[in-house]
Image (cartoon, rainbow, N blue to C red; front, side, top):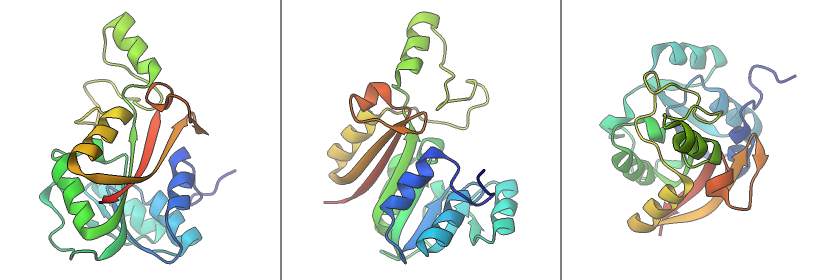
Length: 200
């Protein structure tokens, strides 16, 4: 049985494997600090979290994770260029008002950015839209339309296209469905995409 600080979410293990031991990490929208805590413990990173929700900040503090209360839509002006090795946006990019700006700032602050998000083009979501004509509620998108924290709904293909248009290099991409790796037709079959990007 996992402990409080052990990797619980499927994407945690993938992200841990992407981060080099001893690196510096800024986790934007770090939630309760679970991922950052695992990175500190298992990869010996120097970690800092950024979160806006006060309750989540208390949970970070309880875990012993350094966190600052900040709206990442306002930018990261307090952090210098390349002041971290990695910036992580785990399930937070789709919740910000200005995802383009946030990614630009993340790539300024770190040489590498890890982005994980729910794939809106996963086939259960497509089926619900097609047959029911309603906003889908799935394992990866578990919210009703009126209480979702997501402001943007993107697919794996959308993000790949976005990176191509902006000249971002995709160094690594992983796809999961129900916590299991997906290799064939990820835009259709995966409920989660995890990307490691950098500037060309």
